[in-house]
Image 1: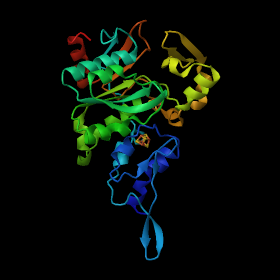
Image 2: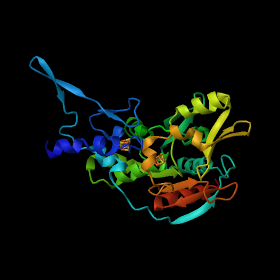
Image 3: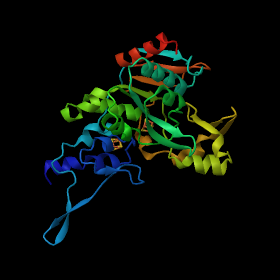
Image 4: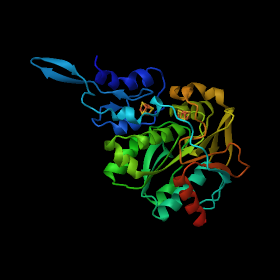
Length: 319
Ligand code: SF4
Ligand code: SF4
């Protein structure tokens, strides 16, 4: 096996086989041949292609003559030191809703960014309120940002949607909102020296991470909340997980909460989260969560100049 072949197997041997995949989806987006797909596993799979030789079909190396953009993108093939925090503050949103919840503070920062032209759109983890399923979404208007629910600790490959934002919809100023591993992937692709990845590098202006102790497979909602706890599907507004991982709770639209010990949902945790040690969004421009925040506020960590610009912009706009 030559070096080229060995390189094409790094995701399979060093990430997928070790249950190390964070599920960020960036390898799928960045694959120049579009041979990586989701097929129900905890990681993407490589499409096996065949070629015809005479009267027979033989397997084709799907990755031959490729510069391995997937490996350039995968956050699980490198280890970084955290980006030092510039500022850490307690923050709450003054608009569009007055709230200290992390997703509401994120929404305010994004609304301000979109309103002032710093952003064309946002690629974000969100929740389909009808199906209660996590989705990766591209939103482009203030109304769509306001209507989004935001990350809910339910897994979806958020960076799969980058191509829609950048290549299909031509967005040039994009924010990405997701888990810390998604921000690691953004950091990875931004630091790549491969010029073919420049469209991503130039378009992504901001990465925002929510503090994270692990995400859950989407069926946790159906199996635990709806079947076991008998919570009506259309009543669930959002999920919350305690910073010490002791409980998980559903906040309902009427303001009431239903809480379960988090161990009951443990078997629904994505395997790749077991090897993650980034709780605080250490590669994100901005990271937010409830840890360390007083009631009615979030802890907001500003790590980069870009993060600083977006927060100042939101403050200036009174959001
Ligand atoms: S961590 Fe992300 S980039 Fe790496 S294999 Fe998993 S989905 Fe792909
Ligand atoms: S714990 Fe959170 S940040 Fe870490 S891999 Fe899982 S989803 Fe990503």
